[in-house]
Length: 421
Image 1 (cartoon, one colour):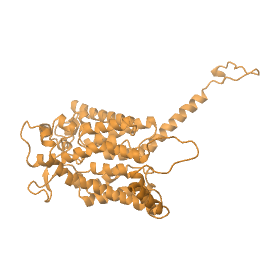
Image 2 (cartoon, rainbow, N blue to C red):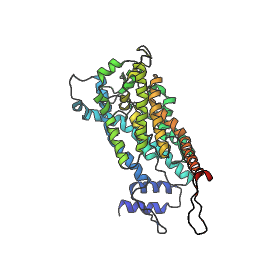
Image 3 (cartoon, rainbow, N blue to C red):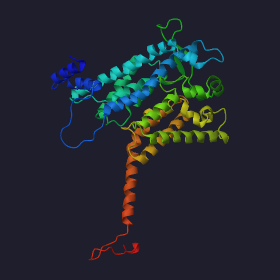
Image 4 (cartoon, rainbow, N blue to C red):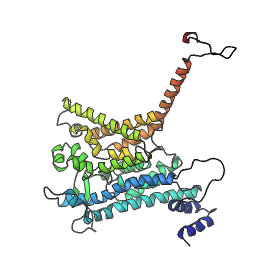
C-alpha cells in the first residue's frame, strides 16, 4: 500500500475528530486534494493558494542558499580577512562557508516553521477549520529578515507574537491588516533593539566552530554611512559587492541580484504586483535624489550626522540594506497591500519614499523599509477608499453633465443641446 493511500485512510478515520485539520493539512501539502466538484460551472485551474505560496518559496530558495554561503564568507572575512586581488567566488563557494550557514541559518528556518506551524495547527484544532496556508511564505521570510546571530528562543517568542497578535486575532490568513513577517520583525526591533541594530556582524569562534559565538565588529554598509564613515565603506565594498551580495547584513537581504531575479519570477508568474515594485523603486529614487541635491546645494555640511546617508548616491539605496527585499517580497503582499490599480501606485511610491527618509533621519537604526511597509499596511485601506470614491465622483460628474437624447413617438432620437438638459 502506498504512503498516499495510507494517509488517505488515516485522514478518513479522523474526518469527524478534532485532529482532522492536521491530517488534512499534511495530505493537501503533499498531494492534490481528492475532493472534486460535480455541479455548476467552475473555473478550472491547476493552482490553488498552497501552490501560489510554494511559488513564492521557490523564488526565495536561491536567496536562502546564497545567505548560507554569505554567512560563512562574512565570518572568515571578519576574522582572517582575504589577500589583496583575491577572487571573491574562489573564497565564497566553499564548504567551510556553507557549513557555517548550515549551523546558523538552517536552525532559524527550522524554528520559524516549527513554532509558526505549531501555532497554526493549534488554532485550526481549536476553531475546527482547515489549517491555513498563509504561514508557508511567512515561515521562510522570517529567518531571511533577521540578523544571523538572532538567538533561537528570541525568534520563537517573536514568531508566537507575530502569528497570534499579527494574524490570528484578526481572523487568520486573509483577514490580517499587517504583514505577519514584518510584525515579527517589528517585535524583535522594539523588544530586543541591541540585537537588531546591524552595527555588528556575528562570526563564529575560528578555533572551535562548535564553541560560543564571538562578536567581532563588522558594520553593515548602512552602519558605515550612518556614522559618516564613507571612506572606510568605499574602501571595503564596491558596487559589485553590494549588487551581488558579498556584504554583511540580515540573512537574506544582501543580494540585490538574486532579489531582482526573484522579483522578475514573481511578476512573470503573476504572483506579485509589478506596479507596487516599480512605484516603490521610483519613490526611493525620488527621495534619495532629493537628499543628494540637499548636499549638492550645500544645505548640510560634512559634520552633520545625516551627511553620510544623504550624500550616498540615490540609486545605491536599492542595493544595500533590506529595501529591495522588502519591496519585492513584503510590500507586494496581496492581503495587506493596496487592492486598486491606482492605489498600488500610491502605496508603493510612499513605501519607497518613506523608507529612504527613515534611513536618513534615524541614524541609530539606519534601516526603515519594514517600518515604512507596516505604516502603509495601515493606510492601504484608506488609499483604496479614496481611489474608489474618486472614481465614483468622476462617474457621477460625467453622468450629471451627460447629454440626454430623448426619443420621439416614432422611436427616433431627437437632437438636444447640452445647455437645455
